[in-house]
Length: 186
Image (tube, rainbow, N blue to C red):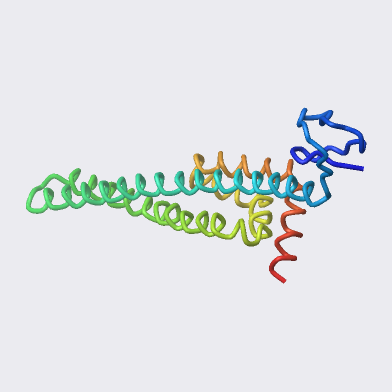
């Protein structure tokens, strides 16, 4: 029995062309190692897609974190300006505005910090995916991560959903990846 070098299709010993992809071979009897190479390419493409969406997720966390941080600083700065403008005057509404602006700035500050902290988490998964995909699979199966991102960054949530769905549709490939990574790491 022989296998196509290009796509791994099982062929008869007399075949000169692959029935599936049309690859022509001359007296090449593809071994199972060639099929392994095809499977490894499939696994690499799968990991590359995860990596790409973690990269987009990281970018979303970073952009939203920076924007919210800028708004927090802006609100706190405006509040302080109103507070300074209200000193020595009898206009109570300026002091009220200053309190509101400072409060809003302080309320958004933790959200900015959380978004910027999540940049590091996404980078961690980007760095570990090719060495050990188990944490990535656990993270991509997490409904809690979807809920968390809903409250703190709905843009990043889109990429988290993509990885969630991609994880569900590629379970067999990921199982092979994890098995191969564990055998290499041992």
